[in-house]
Length: 367
Ligand SMILES: Nc1ncnc2c1ncn2[C@@H]1O[C@H](COP(=O)(O)OP(=O)(O)OP(=O)(O)O)[C@@H](O)[C@H]1O
Ligand SMILES: [Mg+2]
Image (cartoon, rainbow, N blue to C red):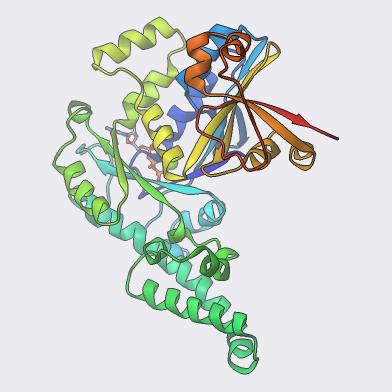
């Protein structure tokens, strides 16, 4: 289950620079870390997780497999993109099925970097992109309304009627220039629009792409953006995409350390971004740890043990018997599975167990 994140924004705001940072950072890792470019604009990267490194140290496995996240870079959207202006429209389809959106906003001044929208204006820029995504969604909603209208109005099916009501509600909301995610539709009601993959229903986080001097403090632009983002309960990550791209190009870890310390950074901003995307999607990680392989797996918060097992193999879910679980902290405290077991810290859990972030799991199953 690779989580997919789509990068959107106006032209020339630093989207591809961010994407290159993402792609390079994976390439520059040790050889047992994977990178593949699925398409020129889709990059699969490892999710940085210090716990995985710790488990590697303790278990000394043949290989370590992090969990991954996919980034999709699209061409800059311009005003009118939803109606086919610019290149963006063609690519909007690419982000239909992403799980979350990272919206990059230019928060740096540089006269050499072309900008068609006048002085730097993060909130205005956010508005332009929001509008394009809303118009695109409106198109999808209206198409479905015209498809289902007759049935909802003439048929006696209450489900079709309810769906129609929700669609109308979405239409009205979009026409008012608002995003679908604000509607907070119930799980049940979301079903009515699930097949539309609405862009403004997806969770969003903002990257304030700031100038070098502002990476720790932010600047007046990122502050204005933060106010607007707060209104919609969204997070803003302050970073400098050019610096990120430079960090990611360095292959020698010592060079990287030095570069980071020159900027008084303890880690790349990219790590913060990836972790925030994880939180945004309410994902958690559990581990499997054996001498062959130490591996991180991504699941949704609240998943029970059999469902968690299914990301390894569907047979694990079907034939699930029980799970042996050691909390990450216990594993580290006692240093090995055996020691944790000897100290009574290995639990046997059944089908109803809700997996916790960091659990080290071993599944027993029938085939
Ligand atoms: N924080 C920053 N400070 C200064 N320059 C930056 C910063 N981030 C990116 N740039 C520069 O801005 C230019 C545009 O960046 P990039 O190509 O990543 O934009 P883009 O959003 O992908 O544009 P497009 O929509 O045209 O694909 C590049 O020259 C890049 O080096
Ligand atoms: Mg680009």
